[in-house]
Amino acid sequence: MRRFSFRPRLWTLIYVVSGVARFPAESCAAELTRWAATRLSEAKAHMLHIAREGVRDLYISGYVWHAPDGFTREDRGRLNAYAYGAGFGKRRIDANGRESLIYALVFSDSHYDPQPIAGYARQWFTQPIASSVSLGAGYTVALSTRSDGWYIPFPIILPLATVRFSRFSLMTTGLPRIPGAVNIKGSVVFVWGRYEL
Image (cartoon, rainbow, N blue to C red):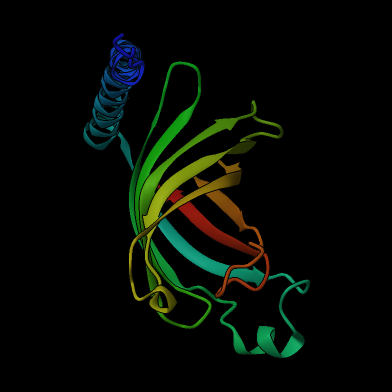
């Protein structure tokens, strides 16, 4: 009597099932790729629209506050609190009052070294509170480099808060303390100005 071998049939079954199961994954990957390509295309068109039709801005950077929770008094005395620098940008306000900006800025970082940053920001503003004062909040997505990171570009996603006085805006963002980060001891608040040309 011939002995029945189940093993080859099991591998055939596994191969067939894995092939069938692979099609939805490939379909999902293709759909994700199409979705990402569409979003990138939309983002590119949005940036080009701001670059072509946006109004120019001048940025003047000025102050960095190093929070005492992560920096000693000696550290804060040694670190640069006056982040002098400048930059340019373009902004566009859509039909809903949302402000989109593209910008490039270079300033003196906490270690007195140049730190460039370039990116995109989006903000939403309140109706004017008193005459021409309004408050804004939003986010920025950017690339930056630092001397203590060997000037290797790194991405940034940070919140923004703005007080707008007619054509001048006082803008700020916060860099939170990151547990376990080697070069980031504590929270930092960065303040700069924008003048709408």
